Image: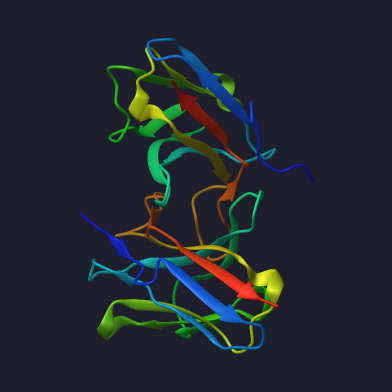
Amino acid sequence: EAGVVQSPRYKIIEKKQPVAFWCNPISGHNTLYWYRQNLGQGPELLIRYENEEAVDDSQLPKDRFSAERLKGVDSTLKIQPAELGDSAVYLCASSSPLLSRNTEAFFGQGTRLTVV
Amino acid sequence: AQSVSQHNHHVILSEAASLELGCNYSYGGTVNLFWYVQYPGQHLQLLLKYFSGDPLVKGIKGFEAEFIKSKFSFNLRKPSVQWSDTAEYFCAVNGPGNTGKLIFGQGTTLQVKP
């Protein structure tokens, strides 16, 4: 079974440029998460989707970040314009449905963003 | 706001030594607790989780963790580490209730010397 697939794995951009990350969750997983992991820190939730609905985006910096999950499957996270402080690893995870005794969140390998 | 604290940022052990990584969380209500591991170059993987019941939870690769509610702790243990356990370990909490949101600690880097 394929896991959570993210692309690209690495991205280097100049500040003020736009960037987008793509995530394909595990088939059948309704819940999709985007996390950001700064160097030396644990991941922090940016946004959570239930199917195509963003049910928790309280931590998403909405002035420059946007996300979408059309048709409730793949998701894209965008930053425009990028700032130096956005350098981090962006992780996508999925679960079905929410976390429970019998389920878990599966993580992708992440996209490492470097803003120069 | 909830928070998770991992006491050790970097641990170095020799093979066969015993391991205990500390984890404390701030919320006093019902929580679900997790330990994730990230091997070099790989994605985060679930080691074990606690939802309810027996506070001593056994996970993969010989790891276990004990939930002590009175101490708000969920420490990870392994009686004898191997070189292949070299990785970064993250404690996480999901609560109150089941929001699906995981709050992670800052992680502990474990280096096992052969």
